[in-house]
Length: 142
Image (tube, rainbow, N blue to C red; front, side, top):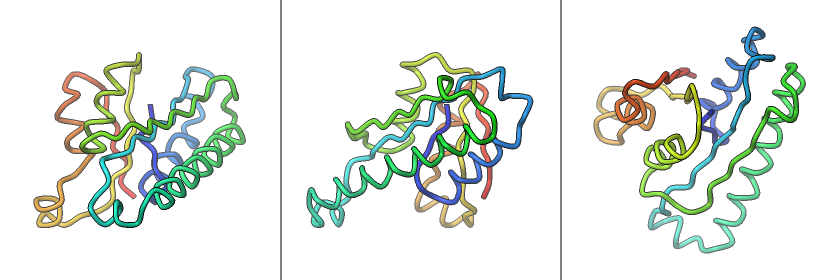
């Protein structure tokens, strides 16, 4: 399962996967995006903004699927999962979706942050690693 959005850190995680040629025949890939509850500013932008976000992410996921196929992954081994029911945080959504499925590995991108930024803003990848104790979690830094 690859936690995915249209960020550079997700692109780095996807790039890592496409470079691991030994995995191509041995695994199925689920590209997962979960929505978090809208912030106040996102709510002020309205439903059209949220609909545009959904369409943008669907297009990004389709591009990621095509990239995996061009790297040699079989189309039937790739699942796109866009969960539109919002979670309180992205980490909660990833953890919940992991627990609902049968996955052997979680791949998540992580942008570089200072310790102060990490403390104030939190870090989805660290929350996922801590919550999925006993599970293989690969964090790819951008």
